[in-house]
Image (cartoon, rainbow, N blue to C red; front, side, top):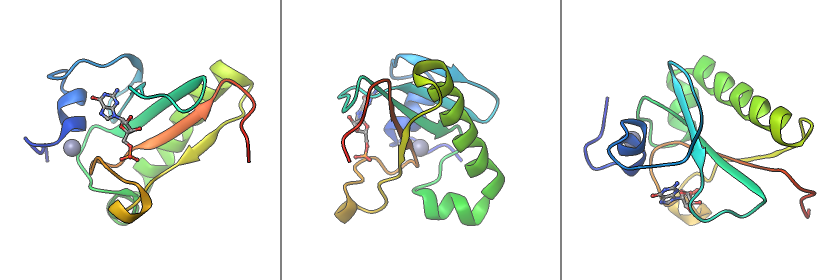
Length: 111
Ligand code: 5GP
Ligand code: ZN
């Protein structure tokens, strides 16, 4: 399931370095290289899915687990408050086609 051309597959495999904040058997979470909030973490499944729609169709339990991981990070960083974003499709701003949840937290966020 690993895509040899996928940046986030390489990060999960530690072929590309990242600042890990959490990992378990099915997910990996690391700091975004260009943070848009005090805490900006990307949560990805180890397995390659192009976007959240593909993941939701193939493995909804894994998607739910990613949300739990996001919650856990926010519990640690900001009393459980966070914003979760899945950019889906190039037109919506998706630039890496390995599904990732942006977790923005650590400070009050503008609407
Ligand atoms: P997207 O635009 O696909 O929703 O989000 C991709 C995110 O990946 C962006 O916020 C971008 O800053 C982040 N990103 C891109 N390349 C790297 C990298 O090599 N390392 C890390 N940690 N983040 C990256
Ligand atoms: Zn991938």
